Length: 119
Image 1: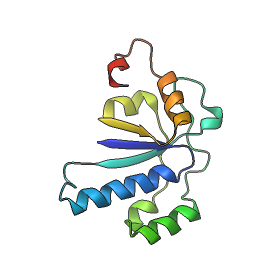
Image 2: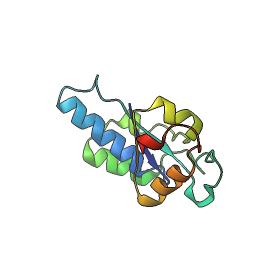
Image 3: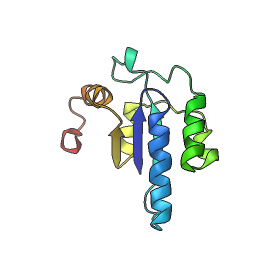
């Protein structure tokens, strides 16, 4: 399972859709399971990030999804909040869509959680 994490409820959704399309094209849809999640990076501070400010899909994301031919059902779903305590154990690969999110995710790792080798 692969999780794309963004802070705008937009880029992770597009990356998820693109990976799903690539996996389907290469007959690997039952091997790769892409998902996306959103964090509010402006107030990301504790060990558990807050939920997205607004889980509804930005209109721009729907336009891009349609233009790229991505699954309209998946693209139209509400965004999900990133929860470090849940997501680290549930996904094989977590991809931050930018360096700010990556550094914040690494900072939020539990100090003795055993995740150091995964990052």
